[in-house]
Image (cartoon, rainbow, N blue to C red; front, side, top):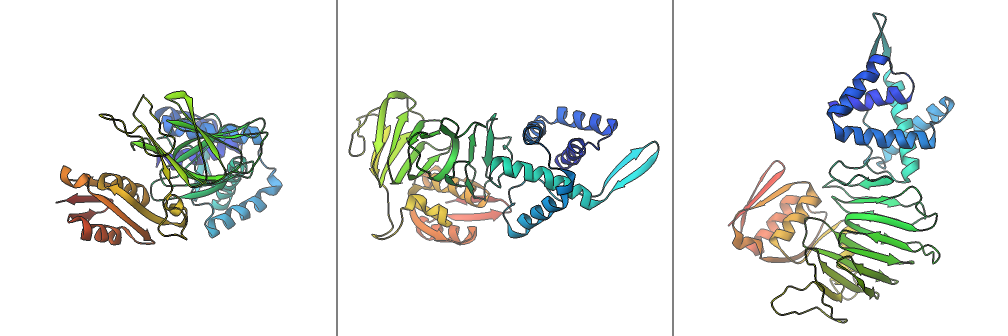
Length: 367
């Protein structure tokens, strides 16, 4: 409710229609909710930097906004249809028509859409604040976007990508939390660099998948074509160059480094910090399993039930609770295409010998 009220008041403020009472109400609401204040500041910053469209364009912009809503390209926009907005002036009540409020919301949405060049969310309060542009996907949703240089990005569930306003001027640098598949436009004069919590990836023009969720134990880079140079933040003097169909898996919680240039690292009494291997294929002619999620296929490739649970949470937007440690390390392999949660759990149950219960948005797995 506070979220909806904040957008209503912000629309009035940016359109110059807010009364002193409404401005005071907006200021109080933002002080009480820092997360909303962060979103409002992002909108105001972009609004001021881009400039509001002329009033004569309102009908055209509104029609464009409705078109995006109808064709599904605005699914991630934080703006919702706004109910009748009422104001009081000198003891009388003035009514703003619903269409007028929607048009103002559409104008703001389009300013954000053009500024970000994507149909994504404002920065998610759960992700780090950034000074540039940020796009997030919630659990249960995925998104495809195009960066200002033309690079195509597929963003998996529960992920965030951000870049500064000067992206593309002298360099192309983005920050990634979660998983994304990149098809980078080649430009030798401006290397493309992806920063994650564990590694930095430098490319010129290539296609590859990066998986770097903070709640997982590893960061994974799978190269499909081209070449990438990877630098480990725990050991910046170590650089690894991947060739097509190679995959690098790096431990997220290790501060030391060992490397075998061809295959998995095997160090006695210590877990592998870095593993260089080949991308996986379901069969000889299939695409790499590491990018099947971009085709809306849910893949488990020798993953433990604990790892499977994390994927299910992001894929279906649920909470998965595993009761019994003996179940957590059992490994599963399988590919699911357009299967619902119940169908996936039933298939896993057949090979895993466990029981499950689905209660609204919660799944409980037990022996």
